[in-house]
Length: 367
Image (cartoon, rainbow, N blue to C red; front, top):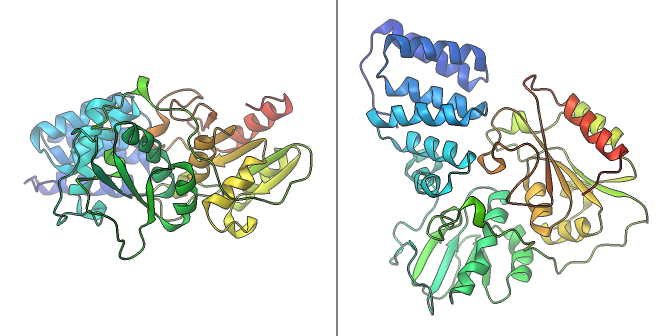
């Protein structure tokens, strides 16, 4: 947590209201309040930290970086280090960003069941030739899919890799990474004693990953089969992400918005929600996607799955809280070359995004 700082009651009330506005998504009011607090107490790290958060959530990454560096100079908390890391990563400044990203595991609310009592060292870039490394899963399905791309790099260094993952990813990962030991991390998991361990999101830093040197070749393929789909244009659709995601209220579509989007999609539309498609796991969903011409999705695991398969995928991004991995670029993703990004404008409305997707499809611009 940020360290407590003594401030006068009026400034404290103003700060509390600004933070409440920020948490409620009232960004204009929150920014006004935080800037008033900073005028009254320029060295108050909490105000600069929260302003940095707000600037990050509204896509002003360089300004967020500046405020978070000022906050960090006064109070080097893990929350501020993580916030700065995210702001840097959103700008593609990966070497420094990855290091700060590690602060996530120092924050109680984000602390994962990491192997803190594991009697083996965390991997920090040591030689892996002839060594066994176990990768622990973290965060959502999309994160695990995104970071799994680094498994072949570890294998190329001569590592014996054990990859732990959520159960619905096990079959897909086991087929996609031959030679790796892929195990579902559900309850007790038995695997040979490793020489090192690493969290999935901790792989890029010791690998020296830069924006220019991302592994971008498609890396997921499925052992599953799916009933043959009818001929003609086929589009997969995902309009909602996990409701447990902190930004889901901004990134997911309402039922009415989803219907508007479906109405502009030509050809046959296939709902990628497993509850609708009947897919048992990601291997099944990948088999369905393999038969499609295009995937249209909000920022969810479907974007990562389609991108990791090299399938044309159009991703709709909210203007608020857009994830660091999509960067501040117009419409492309260095992580997934087959992905095209459609971003909300400053009005926070999905209507123009839906209209743009419909217009591009009418022009036959899949790819």
